[in-house]
Structure formats: C-alpha cells, structure tokens
Amino acid sequence: MASILILVGTESGNAQMVADALKPVLASAGHAVDVSDRAASPADFLGNDVLLVVCATHGSGDIPTNILPLAETLERERPDLSGHRYGIIALGDMTYQDTFCGAGKKLDEVFAQCGATRIGERLEVDASSQPLPDEEALTWIEGWKVLV
Ligand SMILES: Cc1cc2nc3c(=O)[nH]c(=O)nc-3n(C[C@H](O)[C@H](O)[C@H](O)COP(=O)(O)O)c2cc1C
Image 1 (cartoon, rainbow, N blue to C red):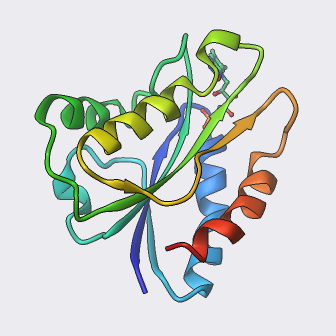
Image 2: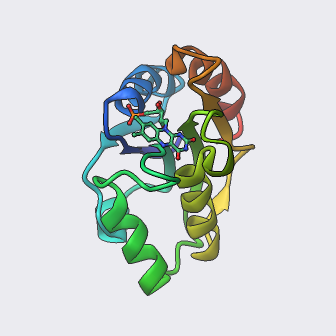
C-alpha cells in the first residue's frame, strides 16, 4: 500500500474540497493519506511515494499562490523524483479557452520533467459544465486508485 500525499493548489477552496473528498476513499483502499496545501519543496514529500496533485488555475493560466513556491522550486532545481509516482486533477473553466486547466497542465509537465511517473490520465474538471468538482473527482478516483 502506498503513502499518498494530496497536494492542493487553491485560491477559493474547490481544490481543497476535492482533496478532502478523496482522502477517505484512498484511505479505505488501504493507503496512508495526507493532504497538504503548504508543500514548498521535495523535502515536504520525502516520505510519500505517491503524490496526487489537485490544482486550480487562476489569473490567466496561473498557478495558485499557495503551490507556486513548489512549482518554482521543481522548475528551478529539477530534483530527481524518479522514485515518485503522481496523479493530476486539474480544476479549470472552459470559458478561459486558451488557459483551460493551465496550472494543472504545467504541474503535470514539471513533475514529469523531474522524472516522476504519472499514474493514469490527467483529470480536467470544467467548472462551466460541472459545478460540483468533487463528484467528477470521486468517479475518476475509482479508476485511479486501482493503478496505485
Ligand atoms: C479570477 C479567476 C481566474 C480564473 N482563471 C482561469 C484560467 O485561466 N483557466 C482556467 O481553466 N480556469 C480559470 N479559473 C477557474 C478556476 O480554476 C475554477 O473556478 C476552479 O474550480 C477554482 O478552484 P479553487 O476554488 O480551488 O481555487 C479562474 C477563476 C477565477 C475566479
């Protein structure tokens, strides 16, 4: 069983809500699960072999300020994360056409550049058609958790 850290990137709480909904599902599958909105460097997830990034997009394709330090550290230092696997849930809104889920896509790219292996496909949740992101995430996690 894995030690999973759910990394939250949020400005207005939706991503936190999704993380809080997923935590018990992963825990009941037998995993050790923590949620953090403060991780700023790989040192903060040394003990976790699996990361689940749940990240909103703000501004114009921008990464939420709480998870920006982590994204910048990974981009700048390119630590070796080949021992880690990760999943991505990107929250966005299709009305922001060109920047839809831009932050989640960027974090996906950054973790891959550091050598981490993605588990499953990225989930992209569109707030303009799905007002309840946790519902879509709860469906998606059923397929994801069996791959962990
Ligand atoms: C000011 C503002 C800017 C946004 N910019 C984008 C964007 O560029 N691309 C996108 O896909 N979604 C964008 N969104 C939509 C949010 O990502 C979406 O509402 C998400 O569910 C918010 O999650 P949070 O509550 O965890 O911050 C924006 C929302 C707001 C309020």
